[in-house]
Image (cartoon, rainbow over all chains, first blue to last red):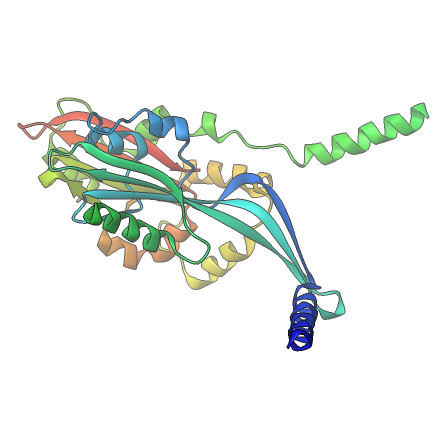
Length: 144
Length: 158
């Protein structure tokens, strides 16, 4: 049994080595916008406090959101910045360089008086899109 | 050794010359955008009717129309962008920014056209919207009399 596991682990290791042998990922500090609006800085977000800030103030500061949910009660601002490069080698010296992005989301919820109720700066997950993340955030509210 | 140092300095200077950046901040200030691209001066006397007459319907409204947002792009294809132009743009879009951006902004300033992105325009001008390099949002807050109470301009790109 122990021997079988060792052989299986060996095969997995060899398979991983074969798959990844032509790839090289170089991480970098986040920079330059790949998709979406310009980045919204944490300091700019902190200017707006739940209970005090209004939808009008947010629109005047950040502009039209990338998406709205729940009958405009939730604003979604999203942008993607480069956080590294993936070098993919191919046969015959061919290859490609791919920008690897990090998607950020600014989520804002307003109450019936159009005041900011909840705000969160977060990231889209590795296996979920920005809108899936935003929709899950809206549901969190319902469960509370 | 001294000659080698001078050679390195010259080589570095030549490389850095190609890496200089264009200052978008000074080129596209709010004042510039208001004066160059908005077809109507906006102040506390401007009515909703005057704005709709010049800019058309807003891209989106909030709070039963109290707030109107105009998502505006500026593009250089006044007569529409054909497939060939779109293919050329797609091929050139990844060139180093300094090589084409300055020329492109000067050209936009002289020849560009303003487009308010509405749901109808989104389908009709898809290529122009994707290829546009200048986008800003005009936010208008109307008072009870239907005149502008507050307004703001948010530059979206560059």
